[in-house]
Image (cartoon, rainbow, N blue to C red; front, top):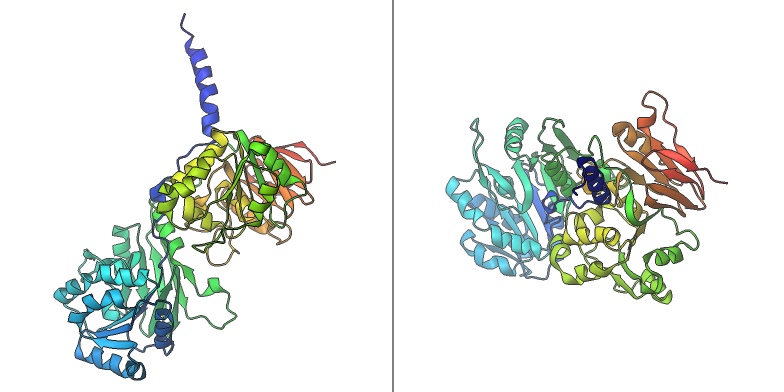
Length: 537
């Protein structure tokens, strides 16, 4: 006898409900692969060269031990200008001036290259220079430094604007500045914006005269009398985004006033081409299998690590530590690993990478995750986790710690915020903004429908989370004090530790003044129903 249609639906619901608790639908292509330059790229917008330019070039090139610094002028006036600027250094032998015809052969053994041209380039000259792209990228990848003058600037990005026609045609560029369309010292912002509209995953940069644009790693700033404007195209849900930066006013100027993160702008461009985020109706915040332990930083509550080990299997626990670092290499030893080993776990391993390809394919990273029953995400700046793991095979295996083994995922500070699907406070320059364009989609998604902030009362972050849920009322805002943790099973969250946890529910009273629910140790809260289950004693 076959079951009724109604019974089939019930059975299907029972089967599918756990799957909706943890879904791996974060895509690899939603995040750039090449997140940072290993060296530096500098571009002069024409006019007066800032006095600091020469020193920046020499200092940056010395970071590479590949060989001499190379000067190359593409016309007689440019060659003479370089000879005058580097008159003293040319006598040393470590700075050499060569002809354009010698450049291709010299690139593999150079630590820095300064390319100069005083006038407009013909199409034939630009095509010849574009062929240098692989060699120049290789030089920068070896931590070298490239400087280009205004005439060459437009060739350094992903796309090259080639004339002033209404259609604004482009050529493929050298991609030394990935996902960038760059114009320098001439042209109109409206023309550049029209190119960006035709290539919506690109960032437009309009560089002014008398200005040096510096891209070091992934950070971007300017020096000189002018400025630079970054721009993203509008779409049906977001307006165009522009930001003009100038030279910093003083050594005490806060970095986000004069410095931008190019990767964050690239991420924002990509994000504008994807489906809206956060969803108007996000998945329910529940952990159908396993446990989340979300610590607000400033120390782990007494005895909590021992409880985490029990949740992971005790003596049979396979623990993996994921540090949060911007550095490519971290120390192989760790206090966390030593503590776990003293507690007698079956295995204690650390994984770390800044290479998304490695996070997708390297068995040294993936193998520990295949057997892991417990994860701990360390403190730092949470956007580093997104850059390294979002959408990768490592990310998928992290979710399987819950779905396949019913284990525990835990973390503190940055390791707390990263557990949400929405990623709060992820600005790569400074950490004062709770909503970071380009990084909001970057959470690892162990808990949907929430935004998690940490160091909450200690850093007086209540207004920030209030503002976030005013912007996204579909999200439940969770602020966790230091030395305090929220333990989540199913949809139930319990507070442990000496501080408090704040729950901001804008959807509950959209017309009233927003007042958070505040719980201390032993307080319990239902994340789906958004209601208190038990107040603290």
